[in-house]
Image (cartoon, rainbow, N blue to C red; front, side, top):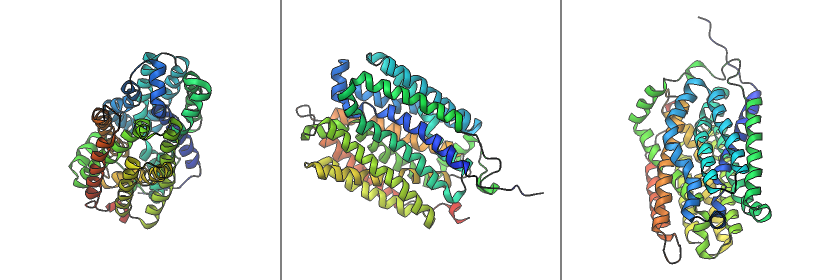
Length: 405
């Protein structure tokens, strides 16, 4: 039998960039209210927790939609699956902007945006596997995750300034237009697959979705990785959702809160490029995961206790570089150790862990904060202890066999 030829096409970068744009826009919509919690609560006449719900709804919806979205991704491909997410992002992003004065309509729009999120985020490793060879997949996954961080940093850093200049209505309308543009770019530029595979058949073939799900849940390495994501991604979701509430009791302003969150994401962007690239070069994953979790824990300690602004910014950068930089590497590692389970399923299951813990951590942080000062030191110390546990779990991870092929 004639062996199927495989080839790497330059157009893979066009597909990846278009995919990155819709990821960034969707994450921008998620994080919009985090750096302006207090002002948004006053604007809508609701509590801080109600504003937190606008971000937390993404995690709640993700828990319900993630597995069906992964099934659609692995069954029908990225054009249809991510297309669903792109369409929902464009439509509900614009609705949110047009009806920005009503908390109820904004909440409904957030639900629509949240339904689109798993169709987009769960496809990161699928896009990498469909268009990139094995030696570039961690890098491609890293760039996909980088787009998440770009969207978050725009939301963190730009939203406070936009709110001061144009108000909440103007800010949401601008973001709504950006959502439509992002959706159009995706539908115009993205193709399902290259003319020929980018790798040998043995590195592309995957099991059926639910067979793969059963298989990966039995793997001890994947179980440990799920716990790592449960803690690490849950901490990230909790910190980004409550960033203003975390630093406000120490006297920092909304713009300082936004810049703190923004610098954390800038660190994540740099880490998401450097860490997976180094990992691809040396063809190892575990040492980078361990080192990153150690750095993230140290940075998190600084974010929790820093009183000076420069120390807060430095700690946020270190935390972001380490915790967010290792995220795409974790997704790729999960896809490799669970081979031949589908990439969308492994990607989605790891993200699901972080969404579940994110909801738990966000509610826990709000309920355990000081009723007198609003300080979140107690829940943050608990999360630091969990990060130490997360680091210890990572020490027992083993390298994937796929890298040795």
